[in-house]
Length: 245
Figure: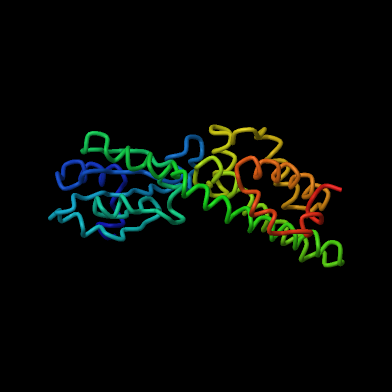
């Protein structure tokens, strides 16, 4: 058995904590989400090194076992991680294990959890258009007798809708695994969490056109209130196919 295979999470944390070149340790994934840990959960750990680090801990770069995954980055690389990118949500909800920079590591994570106003507005507009596109295709396919296409487009539309709703609240969208966890602790303003989750589950599993149109009616009002009317108006008369009958 190799040293890497024997390395446990706590053993590595002890090593890293004793090394002054390590300025931060950040735990992400299920072990950073209270109540989401299972017997299969590993420890996903970011190891943040000083930009001029000389540490020999770099020998653990790329370490990956069923118990411990390590990502070694410089402080500058850590600041940029997930901006933009799929990793942003994971870091937004990550837990600080070590912060030698008087709260700077925690501050970097907090910045990833909050989109700036211009970025959020731009992304919301893009996701709204993508949502409308998939919704339109779903309803049109259902009308024309293409049941599978209608169902698949309906499921796609839910992905884009969630991206839009979280961007409106200036937050990165959670991974599907953490959607219920996120909304239970941090609801979207103006939405009842149970109703929203029930609706997206129903549409994803059935492609129900009536439910899609009903949901779009509420989303359209919300989008226009948030200043995204031009995105919807670009759809012209096609909006009538999406709206509640």
